[in-house]
Length: 452
Image (tube, rainbow, N blue to C red; front, side, top):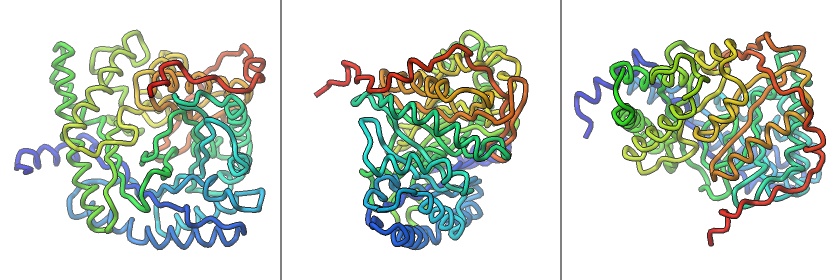
């Protein structure tokens, strides 16, 4: 039972500490929408999304109003379109992205994810069609998000796909140069992508998922930071206990919203993703949490250790509050979406190399990082390869969402607005990785992947 004290604590967390449900995401299977004629495929996709998600936004708004819990985004994830469109005879799959965008607008959601392909072991014809369509699809739509999975612990890394991703990101930036390369902010490259992630830009509805499902992503960096203000000088085991208890309360709230949405929509409850997802708002920063542990600035020595403890404690607290924890579940470290990360990057304390090290212990990886617009595609691909290697070896999800901002250089800033925030242009190494990327082929899976 939820007692009066818990209710009062939750009210304080919401009103003063930026606690919110970051997203209610409805996952919808589109496997039955496959059709050789792309127009017929688009029509089936549009009709099904509009039918299943008709009441999603209203339900979220009703729960928000009745319970007083902010629900920032309502979103949809769909079956990877490369699978759905495999039988399409058309070479260009951008019309499907336009259909997704129309459906998202019709039902009123903020984003729709799943213009995606899973190519960690190789390409099908549908995969190649989708990858070739990504730049135009993202440039022509507002709400569509895209992802490609290029590696797994069991399969290794598809380096041909990695090279393609570098070129794809460059093309995305070029086509949306007037908005700072916005298409890149809607595109993420994964290793070990999960099937039930409710967060964008990487959400898709995996093939192991049911026909339709409700997943919820909670947040609350401000709540954790507030809890740590009374822990100055305390040993780390006490700090970890405080974070666990705080994560427990945050997750309980998320599960309440998820179950309520599930019941009202008549759709199965999937998972609660308890990732600490920051926003550009002051006081809603993962960087602030790390600095509350005693770091002068995030990015200095000790940052990786602090993040490792934070991530682990959040998961331990969340798993005690719900038997349905899933998705990514940890701590996000996006630069543009976190005021503290932005400040550290502007100082030069937080670098891409340090963020890469932090990836080893956090939830995802290099997220919403802006680099000079003239960064070569090979360099972008090499950055992706490094992140994929961390994911492959450590059996964890890693990702890259990087923006080579057209016309920008180190010292400049690119502004995306809203939850995407603004990002200082961070330097990359000038030495070439072209010969490395040109090798192509496959990086084999590590020996510890052979567990059967």
